[in-house]
Length: 176
Image (cartoon, rainbow, N blue to C red; front, side, top):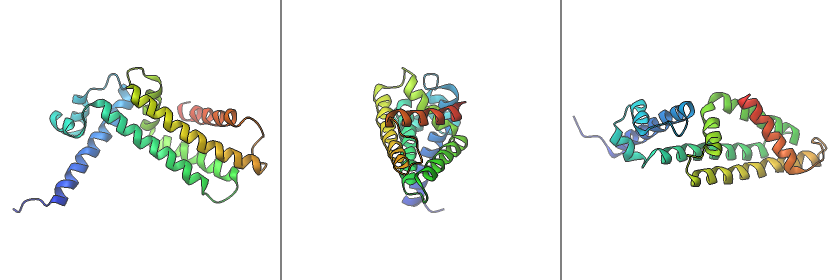
């Protein structure tokens, strides 16, 4: 039997890292940040406790990585909405549909973001990251609303209030 290639080893490392992240996502969403332990994540990912620490320094690093994925996905979705065909209203409807589909397909990400914003045990840097990235998506959504107002498809009014109202409606549908 010949030794594994570098590519095969790299594939195994990526697969193990992904298993750790997937296991952690489910556990964090179910138990919360505070109650989740690295040993649980390692067991659920079917890797040794030590190997979990080889990939991530601690549970905070895993949690932050998962949040970065979620936030990057949200920002990419906003950018895709901006270039969708149709009217601004069509783009807002498309965006709403995609957000709800994403929340249905992977509800864990919504729970992680909510925990990052509300759980005082979450590291301050992680909380700040979520606030900063949320502001970017807020601004992108606000731009869609501006376009809708210019086209006469969205009611005139305070942009921040309209944007926040839209976000709250989405959150209500996701968590309601």
